[in-house]
Length: 381
Ligand SMILES: [Zn+2]
Image (tube, rainbow, N blue to C red; front, side, top):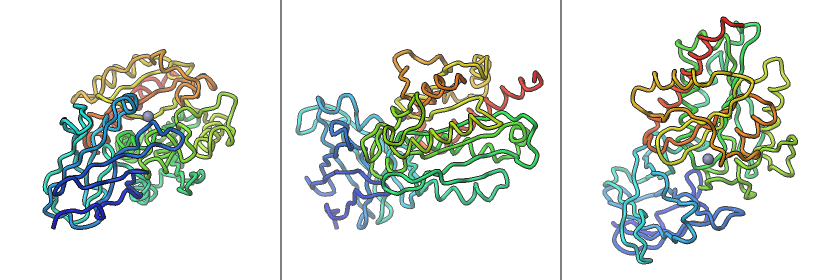
């Protein structure tokens, strides 16, 4: 029995707010994507669930692409993945094809024959709140992990924070690092961070855990991936344009980034202020790490060279200085650098990391490089 429009859901957890679907042939559908809150010109990511009847079907989708509207915020700039269980994912790629609107853009998706009736489809290597809450119990079982709920999103989803260190055997003056993700449908960035957590809890990290404290907010904008919103929260605020140089203010920056900025400020005022702050994102291409050099981690080229040595599969481009065109004080890496003077990083790219294993490997390489940098440097203190 062929799939029908009623077999599709665009509701969370792998949602695409405002999407509409229409059959144009057997197992062949046209999808029109909705616009983001506050930014109707930005298409939401294509995500959906096939609720039933998928087994044995070969789904084809044609997604409406309006060049003038969509050229700056392309819904098709990242791959998608599908899964039967929400946790094991297989990538699927946009293919070219002439559409009825005449544009020869990659806007078609052709899926292999489905093996199960229910199918989840999400952006990149998908990582939503349910993904995090599936991982959390294993992480929290470790004596090195403390977890907290910093607050709730506009739609009431929790914002989880992890703090990782060997608290019982901590050095007298540990260093501290903060890792945070802002944008909703950049799942590869969050799997990269999950790779950091896994390494931090491994035997290899025993020495690092005694000398360093790591703070992580893997999903600061949990409504984003639930609804397919690329950049914004439910109030239409771009989550990486809401750092406030003058200090946290919920009315101006929205609830999600407000609780995060308050927390970063609290860490900076603590006995263990941050050495580094990292903002995690994705764009097209391999992993790309940009540095905003400050008074901490003073020789970032050493870190760059360590990462190059570790990266035997070429997951990353060489680390480089922050590009001036991205110097906006409201971006998290830039804002934290300006406000506190520390060295900050923008971990970008990575849409060529097509599986969560590649993403977690990329994250492991970043934290291993950071650990090696401090292993070489710590005797100076
Ligand atoms: Zn981003």
